[in-house]
Amino acid sequence: MTQSSHVARALEQVSGRPVELVEIVSEGDTNRGSLSQLGGTGVFATSLRESLKRRECDLLVHSLKDLPTAQPEGFVIAANPLRADPRDVILTADGTPLENLPEGSVVGTGSPRRIAQVLRVRPDLEIHDLRGNVDSRMQRVVDGELTAIVLAAAGLARLRPDSPLVYENRDLDGWPTAAGQGALAVETLEDGDPDLLAAIAMLDDAPTRFAVTVERAVLAGIEAGCHAPVGVHARLDGGRVHVRASVYGLAGERAIEEVLSEDVSIDTPGEGYIRPQGSGNGADAADGVDQIDHARDIGNGIARRLLERGAADLVSRESPL
Image (cartoon, rainbow, N blue to C red; front, side, top):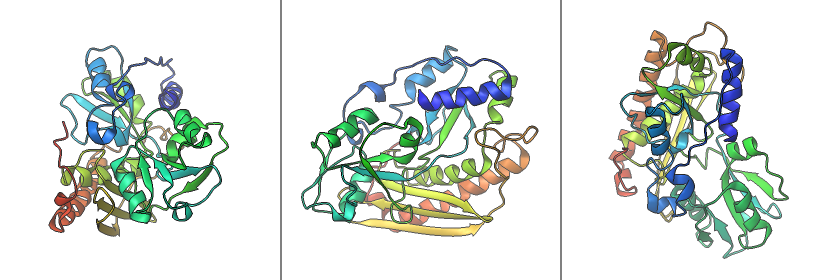
C-alpha cells in the first residue's frame, strides 16, 4: 500500500486526475508458509491480475522482484519508476556485522537466496524462516528471539519504521540481490485507456528498465523462479552497464558467478518518478525497443554462460507461469 501510494500520487501529478487505491489481498499476503516451499511464482501477482482483468481496477503496482518473468498475454508493464536502493540490509540490536556475529547466532529470513548468502559468509549460523510484515520481523530482534534479520533496503526506506535496530548494508559486489529488487512495476492491460497508458509511461525510468530487464532475462534464461537462490544486479554508470550474477547452492556451499561490463546507450533519467514531458516511454519508442532487446541479449548471454558452468544443478528450474 505504501509503494502504491507513491505511484498514485505521481500519477495524479502527471495526469491531473484523482487516483484511488483499491486493496487486493494476494496469496502471498495470507499464506504464512515459507517462500521456499511456496516457490514464490505468482503468489503475489495472480489475484491482482485477476482483479485487473475483471476491470475492478485500472492498474497494478508490484514489487518487481515478486513478479514471474513471463508476462501474461494481454498485460503490459507500462512503467518501471526510478529504482530505490537495491541492497539487502542486516538488522541487529547492536550493529554487529554479519561476519562478527557470535557462533550459533539465529538469523531470520525466508528467502533461499539470502539463506545461501548468509551461510556462505557464516556457515556456523542458524537460519530461522521468517514471514510477516516489517514491524513484526524487526520486533523479533528487539525481543531477543532472533540475533539478526535480512530485509530489503528499499522496503525500509519506503516504510521508515521506528525501530532501535542498527542497519548494516551489504555490498552488491559481494551480495547481489534478487532480480528487480528495489524496483516497482506498474502493470495494466494492453488494450487499456490510451490516456492512462500515456500517463503511466511518464513514470518510466529508462535506466531502471534497462537494468531490471537484464536481471530478469538472467533469471528467465536459467528458468529459475523469482525466489530461487539467484542473485543478480545490473547498474549503469558512465555509459556502461555492469552486471554481477551468482547462483548458489542452497546451503551456500557453492556459487557460480558471472561478471560483465560493456558499453550501452540509454536515455537520460527523469526527475524522480516522473519523466520530462514529451520524452515518451522508453519501452515503446523505437530506440527504446532496441535498448530493451539489447538488455535481454545481455541477460540471456549471462544465463547461457551460467548454465554452461553448471547453474542448473543448483536451482529448481521452474516454469514461470
